[in-house]
Image 1 (tube, helix red, strand yellow):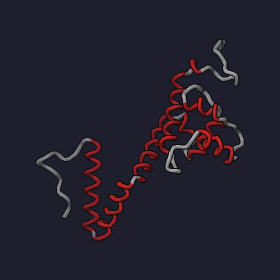
Image 2 (cartoon, rainbow, N blue to C red):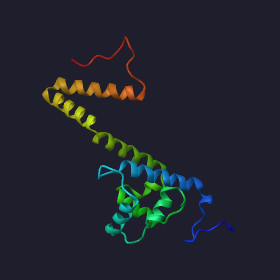
Image 3 (cartoon, one colour):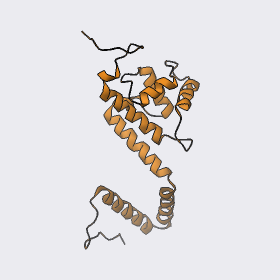
Image 4 (cartoon, rainbow, N blue to C red):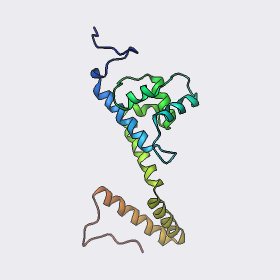
Length: 168
């Protein structure tokens, strides 16, 4: 028999599922930090208004107070409708909130998108595209440099005294 404390809306108290509540809070925080089409972080009110304006499911209403509780890890078990609405607003799959593999993949994609949006990455990409377009040798050179950068990031960079030479 369940003797857990229930909240006013019938849900379990935060103390019963702190890990779940914190996991949801972390995933929501990641979305707030990385999904910024306005060039800045969304406010809680903007998210609530966006969900109301979307009308995509009509299956949930979300208040700023309730969203604040979700973001702060005080609600371990929101409704499926709430998760769907948040997923629609942020443009992520609903499974992002409950599936670790989907969350990891989505976070990686959002991180990459944010990196690509940075001016430095865009400038490098444009220069690389110009070099690659200039000749077949340029394309090979860009490929080699990207592979080296990937190995360096992965900690398997070419060792001094034996670097791989770019193709001729």
